[in-house]
Image (tube, rainbow, N blue to C red; front, side, top):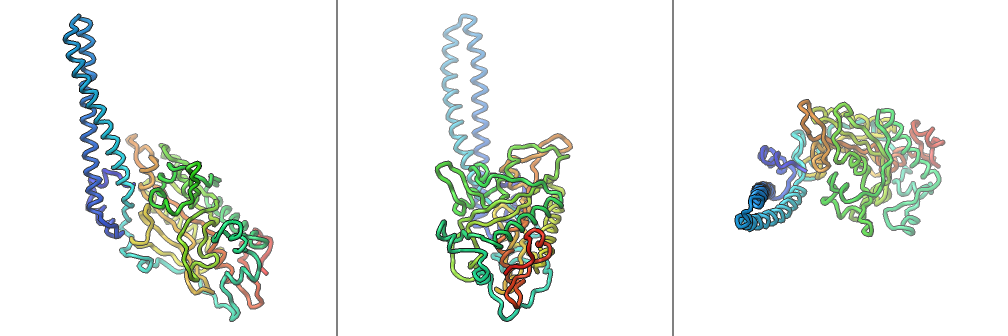
Length: 425
């Protein structure tokens, strides 16, 4: 979340950024935060003053009792009792105002970076670059959902039987391809200097608030109500929360972690080719990269992370493009997001396979994730993450783009040693 000091000292910049996001009632929301903060400060001052006076009177009462002036001591005791009630009332109101302030801050999204384009939807995103040649498919080419059925490598009906729609069963070569991609992505991350982590796939409420999934995306997360735990939507959440409430020595930075997890998302269902097959699932596999770094170099870190993701797509021989998301399409917590999309030759459209984002201090402020500067003062760090990569649409593009006239699927050479085979079918 944004710091109150930023809202007070950089009000015009914040309002301009929220306007770029098309955030409704931005001025009223900011004014509400500032009013609550002013009331919080006032109550804190009243509480502290009453507490200090009560402590002073307590010392005087002791002195009067010691000197035998019981009448004077009793008079001060009545004043002390009134002060204690005043302190209690101020503390109770302060607690309520602090909660209101916290809730109000949770409702305000991050301020976009200056380079974020204005816009309302995905149609307004900026194409940064397009890499690779779109393949020409044989006349017998099929979309991936038909290829999957023909090759018998993923079974959506079995998944629907045992769980529900959006939970496929991978089998045979399909299961081996999943494992191959996960291992390939993890090995590439290790070679790039990331430390592999295997975090839990259930998180508590504090972790959800720490990275901003709560309260913003509460309805999109699966909630195990008996234990008040949430299934993770991405490994970003548990990996970033590893450093919640920590002050990290500057020499340890950047912290670079990678992890594979299944991911769970209760996305609203819809009809059409854009959600068929592997295009949208409720459970899917993903390797995530997460970095924590100093504010002055976090945007260099973001570009390096983006380069790592791009080289994965290049090794998989997939044509792709990089988008800089506009204010109306970017995530609630992000300051700048690049999306990477691969070309789906049979569907004749781009499929998002990765988002790579810098959150600046937005998550760190919630997490209380800090470092000490050269003056030994604690400052907030910057957090970043990226999908490297999400599997379903990668598999869809691999199947569609590499289908041959004889009905087989040629796999990119980099996967051969991971799969133990070079083609499907």
